[in-house]
Image 1: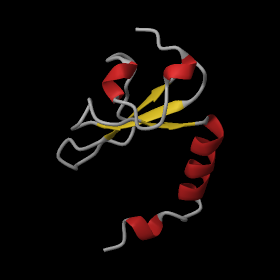
Image 2: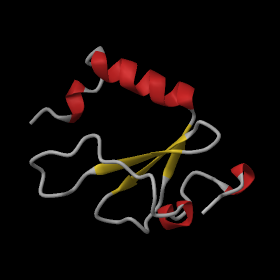
Image 3: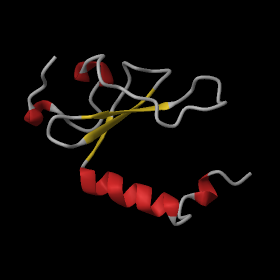
Image 4: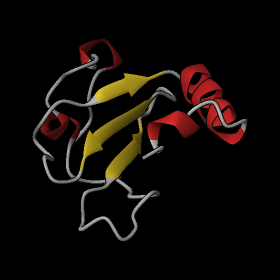
Length: 83
């Protein structure tokens, strides 16, 4: 399925992006509840919840993903996992 760049938007149904190309880079011992990613043709990255593949997709630019990963590596998201 090919999606026109202009029709891809934040919050769109993830199923509209097709079934192919989704990956689970952060899977683990969480009972199958994973964040799935998909690199889009224009370089943006889509994220969806694996347990809700038809739910909303969050769409990020390469720069946004780079900033997020860099922040996580620097510990800026550690508070999200604190118990």
